Length: 279
Length: 276
Image (cartoon, rainbow over all chains, first blue to last red; front, top):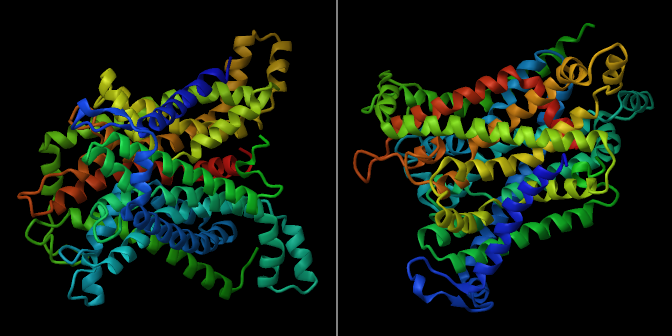
C-alpha cells in the first residue's frame, strides 16, 4: 500500500511511454503527413542503422563520454580527497565545490559558450586567439568537454567521497607504521576498499554523459559534427516531427544505455550491486 | 592539534584551486550580466562600463517573468509530490519486510538510469492528444517521476537510521499513536525530508530536456527553456546581456541552497549512494 503509489507512477510514466515508443517505431508516423501512418515493421530501424549520421552521432557521443568521464574520475578523486581530508575551511570547500553541481545545466553551458566565443568571451582574448574556437570541430569539442567536466566533476567527487568515508583510518595508520608510502596506501588500501563506490560513480556518470543533450544544444545544436545521440533524437522528433523514425532512435538509445549498465555490472560488478540494491 | 606550516600551505593551495575553478565561470556570467550592450562583446572579464539595465530589461520581458513563475511553481509542486510519494515508499522499505521490496528498488534504479530523451517522443505525442502539452501538469508528471528514485534512495537511508523504538516508548508513556508519530518521529525524520526536498528541487529546477520539448509558450515554459529561446535584436545578434542576467537570476536560489545546506547535500547524496 505504501510503495504502491510511487511504483505505479514510475512504471506508468516510464514503462508505458517506452512501450509506446516501441510501437511508434514500428510505424510510419510523421506528424506532417498524418494520413500516411501505417505499420512498416522494422524498416525505421533499418533506416536509422544504415544512416551514416547515426553512426557518426554514436561516435561523437562515445568520444565525449569516454573523455569527460575519465577526466572527471581523476579530478573527482582529487576533489573527493580534498573534501575528505582538508584540515581547515572544510565547510567552505564543500560548499563552493558543490556550486557547479547545483547550477542549472543550461546556465553552465552558456557560461562556457559565451566565455569561449570570439564575439563575447574572455578565453580567446586570454589565449590571444584570432579565430573563433567555436567555429571549428576541435575547438568546439574542447569547449563542450570542459563545460561538461566543470559541471559534473562535483557529483563524481561526492559519489567517491561516500567511498572514501568507508575506509577505516586505523587501517591507513597501520600501513603507515609498516612503512607504506602515501601512494601505496592509496592504491593498495583506499582504492580496493572503495571499489563499490567507484563502480557506482563511474556507472552513473557514464550513463549520464551518454545522454548528453543540454550542453550540445546550447553549443549550436550539434553543429560542426558535435551532434550527440540525444540531440539527433530531439531533432528527429521535434524539428522534423518524424515520430516513427525518432522513436526508433529513442529505442536504440534506450537499448544502448541498458547495454552499458549491463556490461558495467557484469565486468566490474562481481559482488558489488550498484546503488547497493541490498537496501 | 597543530599542523606543520608546509601542510597548511599545501591545503591552502588546494583550497584556492577548488574555489577559483568553481567560481570563475559563475563570476564571469555575473560580470557579463553587468556589461552595457556596447561593451558586451569586448571580451574583457571585468566590465569597462557597468550597468544594471540587463536585469531591468529581462523583468520587463513578459517571457522571463512568466518563465520564472512557471519554474518556481512547477519545481515546488513536483518536489512536494515526489517527496510525499517517496516518503511512503521509503518508510515501507526501511521498516517493513515485504516481497516487492527488491522489485521497487530495481524499478527505481532502472528509472534513475533511464535516458529521459527516450520519453520525449511518446510523451509529446500523448500530451498533445490529451491536452497536457504546454501545461504545468505536463512537466510536473515527468519531473516527479524522475525525482522519485533519488528521493526513495535518500529517504530510506535516512529512515533506517531513525530509532523507531522511541515511538513505542512514547506510547507506553501515554502518548496516542498520532502524538507519538507527530512529536517523536516527525522531528527525527525532518532532516531527511529537508535534504531530499533540496536535492529534488535542484533536479526539477535544472531540467532542460522536458522543458524544451513539452512546452512552447509562456503558459508552462520554464527558465532554462526560455533563456535558450531569448530573441536577439535581430536574427544575427545574440542577446548576451539578457542571457547572462537571466542566468544569474536562476542561479542565485540554487547557490543559496547549496551554500546553506552544503552539509546536508553531501550527507544526503553520499548516504544515498552507499546504502540506497
